[in-house]
Amino acid sequence: MSELAAVFRRPFAEQVAALRLRLRDQRPSGRWDQFEGPEHDRMFTVAGTVAAGAMKADLLADISAAVQKGIEDGTTLDEFRRDFRSIVEKRGWHGWTGEGTKKGEAWRTRVIYRTNMATSYAAGRMAQLVEGKFAWWVYRHGNAMEPRLHHLAWDGIALEPDDPFWATHAPPNGWGCTCYVVGARTPAGVRRVGGDPDKPLPDGWQARSPKTGAPVGIDKGWDYAPGAGVSEAILAMVGKTERLPAPIGAAFAASLPSAAVARLEEAFAAFVDEALANPPRGRHRIVGAFQPRWVSALRVRGLEPETAEIAVRDEDVLHTFRDVKTANAKAVDLAWYRALPRHLLAPDAVILDTTRADRPALLLLYGKGPGTPKLVVLVDYHVRKVGTVNVVRSGTIVDTQGIEGRLGNGYELLEGRL
Image 1 (cartoon, rainbow, N blue to C red):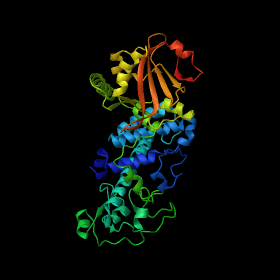
Image 2: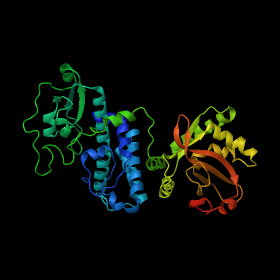
Image 3: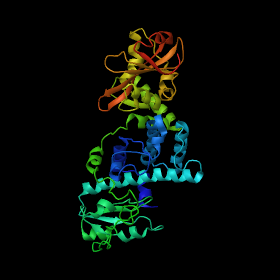
Image 4: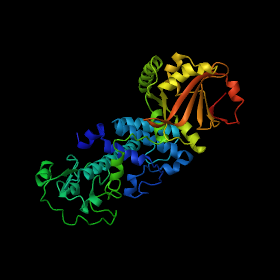
């Protein structure tokens, strides 16, 4: 197993931070070489998505969420391919390079998956090398089974971090390249990691190919050092709870398998029981996420939330089953409430409530007429020690006829029917 394959199954903090930095800025592109190499350190794109029209933002969010899952959860290329097929079918994306043949799809998904894996790894490693203040960086060739002669010629070369070689030759420096860099503090350390402190650079290493414009041996568009310009930003993110932008988080949550939802439901049921049996202690539980279409609807109205996460605090549980009774309201059934993670996936209607003075809310309705369960989800609510999340504040039984009468007067139906 290659070093890259081993790392991908156990993503390290700097790699995750490097990817999340890129996911903050998603841009559709028409060609794979539309953006310069260093731009990719701060943005995520997929070639051909310009042709996706109005749904390109949702398409990019879905694909980036699948990439995110692959890196952070260590899922396989086969699973990414299944996610990709589901995404292009759901979004109706056509005309992408590779579409129409099994071989073409395999090539396209492999390029997306492995390129993001390799560049996020390299950017994370770059941040580690910078932080470690190593005296030498050592180039190591990564694929003995399919060697690239130029890359093999650079194997073992040890140079100072500010040597101009790294600005253009830091790996990965080609499609499918698995070369990597390790740090060393002494000549003996260089040898321990497989390098040679006395090995010189080959003659003509700076020569450029007239066909690609890149140095000979480096693929077009790969003559840059992944992560070199963002190492400080990556290191600043490590150790922090860095939330994904709402569109990406929503797409990621929507792809969770039913088994994961079942585990979430089981954990939340135990949380509810404990909250009802004890005084509030400032605890919370993540129970789900906004659906991608809810985030899109809020975005159109200038109300895109900071995160897609939906949480319930222990005090919200008490508010639902104790406080609402004092306001002559009836709480939802406890057994129904304990299954909240499942219910959040499929409300019958979603209404935007902008009548509140502090923040908007989503009203999730389950049924029609008298006896309908309603959840109130406050958008972008600050929770102490957690940050900004969307909070299920209460769950009550209502008559949807009264809600229907308020449409157009601070209430707006986002989806479903009343």
